[in-house]
Length: 108
Length: 112
Image (cartoon, rainbow over all chains, first blue to last red):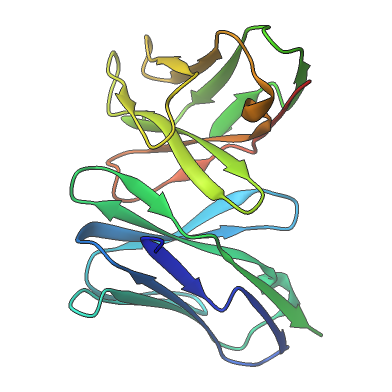
Protein backbone atom coordinates (compact mmCIF):
# COMPACT_ATOMS: atom_id res chain seq x y z
CA UNK A 1 0.00 0.00 0.00
CA UNK A 2 1.35 3.43 -0.94
CA UNK A 3 1.96 5.75 1.98
CA UNK A 4 0.23 8.56 0.07
CA UNK A 5 -2.92 8.05 -1.97
CA UNK A 6 -4.56 10.76 -4.02
CA UNK A 7 -8.05 10.71 -5.44
CA UNK A 8 -9.32 11.05 -8.01
CA UNK A 9 -6.46 10.29 -10.39
CA UNK A 10 -8.16 12.29 -13.14
CA UNK A 11 -10.89 14.87 -12.96
CA UNK A 12 -12.66 16.78 -15.71
CA UNK A 13 -15.08 19.53 -14.75
CA UNK A 14 -16.84 22.53 -16.23
CA UNK A 15 -15.64 26.05 -15.62
CA UNK A 16 -17.15 27.42 -12.43
CA UNK A 17 -17.50 24.10 -10.64
CA UNK A 18 -16.27 23.54 -7.09
CA UNK A 19 -13.36 21.09 -7.16
CA UNK A 20 -12.15 18.78 -4.39
CA UNK A 21 -8.96 16.74 -4.56
CA UNK A 22 -8.17 14.33 -1.75
CA UNK A 23 -4.96 13.07 -0.19
CA UNK A 24 -4.86 10.24 2.34
CA UNK A 25 -1.76 8.98 4.08
CA UNK A 26 -0.92 6.16 6.43
CA UNK A 27 1.94 7.41 8.64
CA UNK A 28 2.58 10.13 11.18
CA UNK A 29 3.63 13.37 9.57
CA UNK A 30 5.05 16.73 10.53
CA UNK A 31 3.53 18.55 7.54
CA UNK A 32 1.73 18.10 4.24
CA UNK A 33 2.51 19.98 1.04
CA UNK A 34 0.25 20.70 -1.93
CA UNK A 35 1.94 21.41 -5.26
CA UNK A 36 0.66 22.36 -8.70
CA UNK A 37 2.41 21.20 -11.86
CA UNK A 38 1.47 23.12 -14.98
CA UNK A 39 1.06 21.45 -18.38
CA UNK A 40 4.46 22.86 -19.36
CA UNK A 41 6.06 21.03 -16.44
CA UNK A 42 6.71 23.89 -14.03
CA UNK A 43 5.98 23.22 -10.35
CA UNK A 44 4.51 25.73 -7.93
CA UNK A 45 4.18 25.29 -4.18
CA UNK A 46 0.58 26.00 -3.11
CA UNK A 47 0.30 25.24 0.59
CA UNK A 48 2.21 23.63 3.38
CA UNK A 49 0.14 22.81 6.44
CA UNK A 50 0.32 20.81 9.61
CA UNK A 51 -3.14 21.54 11.00
CA UNK A 52 -6.40 23.27 10.21
CA UNK A 53 -7.01 25.17 7.03
CA UNK A 54 -5.24 27.59 4.70
CA UNK A 55 -6.72 29.79 1.99
CA UNK A 56 -5.14 31.66 -0.88
CA UNK A 57 -7.43 33.24 -3.43
CA UNK A 58 -9.76 30.54 -4.78
CA UNK A 59 -7.72 27.73 -3.27
CA UNK A 60 -8.39 26.21 0.14
CA UNK A 61 -6.45 23.39 1.79
CA UNK A 62 -7.58 21.51 4.86
CA UNK A 63 -5.99 18.78 6.90
CA UNK A 64 -7.34 16.39 9.52
CA UNK A 65 -4.39 14.89 11.36
CA UNK A 66 -6.48 12.34 13.28
CA UNK A 67 -8.05 10.99 10.08
CA UNK A 68 -4.76 11.29 8.12
CA UNK A 69 -6.49 13.14 5.32
CA UNK A 70 -6.14 16.41 3.48
CA UNK A 71 -8.27 18.08 0.82
CA UNK A 72 -7.54 20.76 -1.72
CA UNK A 73 -10.55 22.75 -2.88
CA UNK A 74 -10.81 25.11 -5.82
CA UNK A 75 -13.79 27.46 -5.91
CA UNK A 76 -15.12 28.92 -9.17
CA UNK A 77 -12.75 26.78 -11.21
CA UNK A 78 -11.25 28.20 -14.39
CA UNK A 79 -9.48 26.58 -17.36
CA UNK A 80 -6.19 28.03 -16.13
CA UNK A 81 -6.54 25.78 -13.05
CA UNK A 82 -5.96 22.79 -15.34
CA UNK A 83 -2.83 21.13 -13.99
CA UNK A 84 -1.61 18.16 -12.01
CA UNK A 85 -2.03 18.62 -8.27
CA UNK A 86 0.44 16.75 -6.09
CA UNK A 87 0.31 16.03 -2.39
CA UNK A 88 3.51 15.32 -0.42
CA UNK A 89 3.86 14.22 3.18
CA UNK A 90 6.76 15.05 5.45
CA UNK A 91 7.49 12.17 7.78
CA UNK A 92 8.62 12.98 11.29
CA UNK A 93 12.03 11.51 10.33
CA UNK A 94 12.47 14.04 7.49
CA UNK A 95 11.44 11.61 4.76
CA UNK A 96 9.31 13.21 2.01
CA UNK A 97 6.87 11.03 0.07
CA UNK A 98 4.87 12.31 -2.90
CA UNK A 99 1.51 11.17 -4.19
CA UNK A 100 1.19 10.36 -7.87
CA UNK A 101 -0.91 13.42 -8.52
CA UNK A 102 -4.42 14.29 -9.66
CA UNK A 103 -4.77 15.50 -13.24
CA UNK A 104 -7.41 18.24 -13.39
CA UNK A 105 -8.93 19.48 -16.62
CA UNK A 106 -11.36 22.39 -16.51
CA UNK A 107 -13.46 22.82 -19.63
CA UNK A 108 -14.50 26.33 -20.72
CA UNK B 1 15.19 38.01 -8.82
CA UNK B 2 15.75 34.87 -10.84
CA UNK B 3 14.52 32.52 -8.08
CA UNK B 4 15.83 29.01 -8.72
CA UNK B 5 17.83 28.40 -11.88
CA UNK B 6 18.70 24.95 -13.15
CA UNK B 7 21.34 24.27 -15.76
CA UNK B 8 21.33 22.66 -18.20
CA UNK B 9 17.69 22.39 -19.28
CA UNK B 10 18.28 19.38 -21.52
CA UNK B 11 21.09 16.86 -21.82
CA UNK B 12 21.71 13.56 -23.54
CA UNK B 13 24.42 11.35 -22.04
CA UNK B 14 25.89 8.06 -23.05
CA UNK B 15 25.92 5.26 -20.51
CA UNK B 16 28.96 5.60 -18.28
CA UNK B 17 29.47 9.31 -18.84
CA UNK B 18 29.47 11.72 -15.94
CA UNK B 19 27.82 15.10 -15.54
CA UNK B 20 26.86 17.70 -12.98
CA UNK B 21 23.53 19.48 -12.74
CA UNK B 22 23.64 22.91 -11.17
CA UNK B 23 20.93 24.48 -9.06
CA UNK B 24 21.38 28.12 -8.11
CA UNK B 25 19.09 30.23 -5.93
CA UNK B 26 19.30 33.92 -5.15
CA UNK B 27 16.85 34.06 -2.24
CA UNK B 28 19.31 33.20 0.55
CA UNK B 29 17.37 30.02 1.30
CA UNK B 30 18.88 27.51 3.71
CA UNK B 31 17.16 24.38 2.39
CA UNK B 32 17.74 22.98 -1.07
CA UNK B 33 16.45 19.78 -2.67
CA UNK B 34 16.98 17.59 -5.71
CA UNK B 35 14.06 15.48 -7.00
CA UNK B 36 13.51 13.25 -9.97
CA UNK B 37 10.17 12.77 -11.72
CA UNK B 38 9.36 9.67 -13.73
CA UNK B 39 6.12 8.71 -15.48
CA UNK B 40 3.93 6.66 -13.16
CA UNK B 41 6.29 7.17 -10.20
CA UNK B 42 5.70 10.79 -9.34
CA UNK B 43 8.33 12.96 -7.71
CA UNK B 44 10.99 11.36 -5.54
CA UNK B 45 13.55 13.09 -3.35
CA UNK B 46 17.17 12.27 -4.23
CA UNK B 47 19.21 14.39 -1.81
CA UNK B 48 18.69 17.54 0.17
CA UNK B 49 20.65 20.11 2.14
CA UNK B 50 19.68 22.09 5.22
CA UNK B 51 22.50 24.60 4.91
CA UNK B 52 25.87 25.36 3.40
CA UNK B 53 28.24 22.44 3.79
CA UNK B 54 25.51 19.93 4.68
CA UNK B 55 23.85 17.21 2.61
CA UNK B 56 21.52 14.33 3.39
CA UNK B 57 20.05 11.38 1.50
CA UNK B 58 16.49 11.27 0.34
CA UNK B 59 14.44 8.37 -0.93
CA UNK B 60 16.52 7.47 -4.03
CA UNK B 61 20.13 8.59 -3.49
CA UNK B 62 21.98 5.69 -5.14
CA UNK B 63 24.01 6.67 -8.20
CA UNK B 64 24.04 10.36 -7.29
CA UNK B 65 26.30 12.62 -5.27
CA UNK B 66 25.68 16.18 -4.16
CA UNK B 67 27.62 19.11 -2.82
CA UNK B 68 26.68 22.43 -1.21
CA UNK B 69 29.92 24.32 -0.97
CA UNK B 70 28.19 27.67 -1.32
CA UNK B 71 24.80 28.48 0.16
CA UNK B 72 23.35 29.54 -3.18
CA UNK B 73 24.39 26.45 -5.14
CA UNK B 74 23.41 22.79 -4.87
CA UNK B 75 25.13 20.46 -7.33
CA UNK B 76 23.88 17.02 -8.34
CA UNK B 77 26.48 14.70 -9.83
CA UNK B 78 26.13 11.52 -11.81
CA UNK B 79 29.49 9.74 -11.80
CA UNK B 80 28.58 6.98 -14.25
CA UNK B 81 25.23 7.56 -15.90
CA UNK B 82 22.84 4.66 -16.44
CA UNK B 83 19.68 4.48 -18.58
CA UNK B 84 17.68 4.16 -15.33
CA UNK B 85 18.69 7.73 -14.57
CA UNK B 86 16.77 9.03 -17.55
CA UNK B 87 14.33 11.39 -15.90
CA UNK B 88 13.30 14.98 -15.36
CA UNK B 89 15.23 16.49 -12.46
CA UNK B 90 13.85 19.33 -10.37
CA UNK B 91 15.61 21.46 -7.83
CA UNK B 92 13.82 23.44 -5.12
CA UNK B 93 14.74 25.73 -2.28
CA UNK B 94 13.01 26.87 0.91
CA UNK B 95 13.97 29.24 3.71
CA UNK B 96 12.90 26.86 6.47
CA UNK B 97 11.80 23.57 4.93
CA UNK B 98 8.23 24.35 5.99
CA UNK B 99 7.21 27.19 3.71
CA UNK B 100 8.18 29.30 0.74
CA UNK B 101 9.25 26.55 -1.61
CA UNK B 102 10.44 27.68 -5.04
CA UNK B 103 11.08 25.16 -7.79
CA UNK B 104 13.41 25.32 -10.76
CA UNK B 105 12.07 24.69 -14.24
CA UNK B 106 13.59 21.22 -14.50
CA UNK B 107 16.34 19.42 -16.40
CA UNK B 108 15.38 16.71 -18.86
CA UNK B 109 18.15 14.11 -18.89
CA UNK B 110 18.28 11.18 -21.28
CA UNK B 111 20.88 8.45 -20.87
CA UNK B 112 21.34 6.27 -23.93
